Amino acid sequence: MTTFLPYAWFGGRCVPFAEATLSVATHALHYGTGAFGGMRVLPNPDDPGELLLFRADRHARRLSQSARLLLIELSEETVMAAVTAMLQANRPTSPSYLRPFVYTSDLGIAPRLHNIQTDFLVYGIELGDYLSPEGVSCRISSWTRQEDRSLPLRGKVSGAYITSSLAKTEAVRSGFDEALMLNSQGKISEASGMNLFIVRDGVLYTPGVDQDILEGITRASVIELARSMGFTVVERPVDKTELFVADEVFLTGTAAKITPVRRVETTDLPAARPVMESLRMAITRITEGRDPNFSHWVTRVRLDG
Image (cartoon, rainbow, N blue to C red; front, side, top):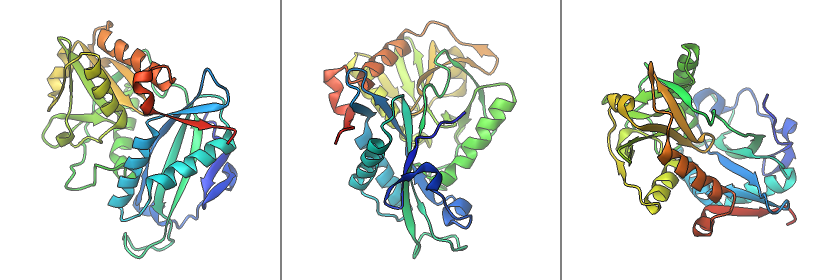
């Protein structure tokens, strides 16, 4: 059961979550003309008066860039001010996930992005593990990841997630936990809402930004972190058959964090995942504010002011 944080940022102020409502005629509801982000929030285990946000500045920047793709001006400062005010109103005491959303709020029926009203909101939910930390089973989806020439894939545009939704439901209804989508060239692109890494002979491989992936912030963090730990990371096209012979396969995302893949189709993958485990432990230390070398990845929000 989803537990929503009691206050949302809506209409330029914090209001009770139940009061943050939209008209059934809202333009974005009908045309997918919105863009969203996601931020992980963790109460500081060493200071109950402080919340820790993982790479909030990067998330705010990506949402601002996503908004620009929809011809909406939304500054990073506006995003962070709303997030801060909303967190101070809610004072969450358990790990949570924030969903900032910029959208066309007009009540018109014409599909367009010009001469239209827009708005911005933020709400949150309590969220521990989005996917099982023990590992997930994946199938290759029959749905193909969209191309950047047909949708602005550099942003988290809400309308683009119809394909993710179809792929996820297809996977679950056929007995799997998650879907892996190929791009139009037949290469692995990403999961329904996560990026993908494989490990072969100690080297990490991940589909590059030319493979119609979302430029994931957790993905970029894992690449930088892995290289700082001495691992080689190669961004290149990944073939489907590489999944079946990989030493390790894992997914990354704000909600998913770092999640191992234990089975692809009918092939069980090795249970030992030393590379992924070392990365997962390292990024956990960072998100908890315990690694001074990556303290710049953590935004601290004081609840008392």
